[in-house]
Amino acid sequence: MMDVVRKHIVVTGMVQGVGFRYFAVMQARKLGVLGWVRNRLDGSVEAEAQGSGDAVELFVSALRRGPRWADVRAVEVTDIAPRQDADFRVRGL
Image 1 (cartoon, rainbow, N blue to C red):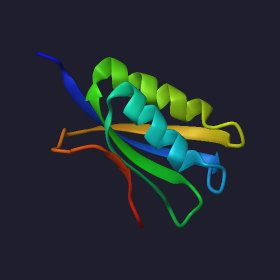
Image 2: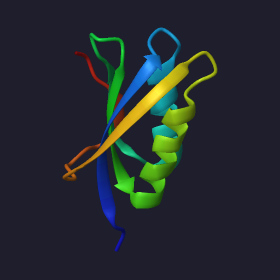
Image 3: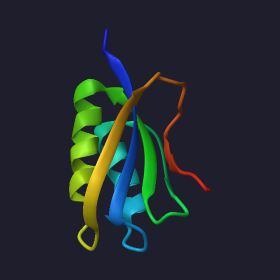
Image 4: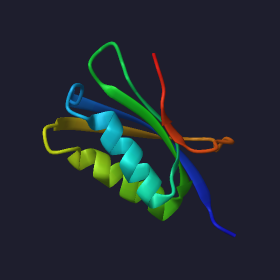
């Protein structure tokens, strides 16, 4: 049986207005990761990602790079308890 992990992720830098949420959705779908992503009022992007440990680590690595126009300054990752998710989606504030 697969070990399921869930991470809470906050990405700071120039990460809004550069396609970061779309990039996160595409990476998550490619890797089979479930969860969500959203912009925060402070200019950062927040996400939760759930899946196999390897898939989630690859997802976090992708967020550390970001899309072409992003300038990722820092990525904060926290372990949290897994939940039931049906897909990976963009959430509102």
